[in-house]
Length: 483
Image (spheres, rainbow, N blue to C red):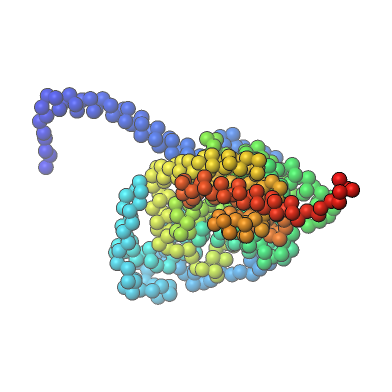
C-alpha cells in the first residue's frame, strides 16, 4: 500500500529546504568518511622502495626458523576443524570433537558498545561464539582483518596473511619461539618493553643493544655495529625487535627516513623485523608515519597489532600479520599451545573492526584523552626542573626521566619512594640486564587522577633530593690535604 500525505505550505517550504541541503549533507558524510580513512592511513603515497632485491621465497624462510619450530606438524583434528568451516551443511560429520551446543549454559550475551550500538548474541550466533574455531581465527574476523590491514598499511604485493592472538604479548612469545635458537644474537633498543625480554630469556640470547635519541633507534649506529660484526666473522642476528611508535618506555616515534634505513639494513644484513605497534593509535603528532609493514617489499616484516591500550586490555585482542610461510608456522604453534584465541573475544573484535567509522571515532577520542593526560602530567613535571631530564613523549603512555645525581634508581624506587607512598618503575625493568645500574625511571600518565599529578611530582622531587643526599654521603670523603 502506498500512502500519500499532503503538506501545509510551510512544511512544503521546509521540505524543499531540506532537499536543497542534501548535497551539503552528502559532502559532509563524504568528508567524515575521508577523515576516518585519513586517520587509518599508515602508509606513504610515495612508498616505492627499490634496490633491496626480490621477495624472500618459502625456502628462504627456513634459515630463520628454529629447529624446534621445524619439528612441529599439523594436528589432524585441527585440520578437520578448519575443514568443517569450509564444507557446506549438506555434509554429515562424525569428525569434530566439538561439544553439543545444548550444554552451553549461557543463553544470551547483550553488550552495549559506544558508537556502534548493541551487540546481541543469542541462538545460533551465540552458539558459534562459544564453540571451537580454526586455530588461525574466526573466519569472518580474518576476512575483516585482511581488508583492514590492506586498507591501513597498503603493504606491497608479498604473500602474507593474519592470525588472531591473545594480545600483543602472545604474538611476541610466538615469534621468539619460532625464530630463536640458544645463544642467537638479537637486535633491541637499549631500553625496550619488558615482555620482549622475558620472552627472550629462555634462549640465553646475545643482546645487540642499540641506543636511541629523541627519534628512536639510531640506524647509523645499527649499521656500524652490524658491519663490524660481519667483518669480524661473528654470528649475525636473524631478527630485530622494535616498537616504532610510542616506544615503551621512551615514548619516541621513529620517523619515516629512519624506518626506511632500518628496513634497508634488514635486507642488506638479512634479518627479519618484528614490528610491535600497540601504540600506533596513540600518536600525538598530526603526521602519520608509514609502518614497516607498508615498506615491506621483500617479506621481512612480522607485524604485531593490539587494541589493549585503546579498546580493552582484558579482551586480549591482537593479531599478527606475516609472510605466509611464517604465518603457517605460527599457526602450528597455536595448535599445540592453546588451539585458538577466545572465540567470544574474536566475535566482539569483529564487531568493532567491521564498524570502521565508529572505531575511528573511538580511537580519536582515546588518543585525545591520553594527549590531555600527557599534557597535564607534563605541566606537573615542571617542578622537577633541575632534578631530572625528560622530553615530551610523541606517542604512547609514558614519560622517561633521567634522574640527576643518582647513579642507580633501584633504592630510590623500592625504598625511598615506596616509603613515601609513591610508585614508579625503575629503568632496569626495560634493560635486558636488570642488575645493571640505571639512572632512568618511567612514569605512566594513563590512569593517575588529575588531582594527584601535582602531589605525585612534589613527592618525586622530595624523593630525588633525599636520594641525592644519600648518594653524596656514600662518596668517599677527601682529606683536607687533598682539597
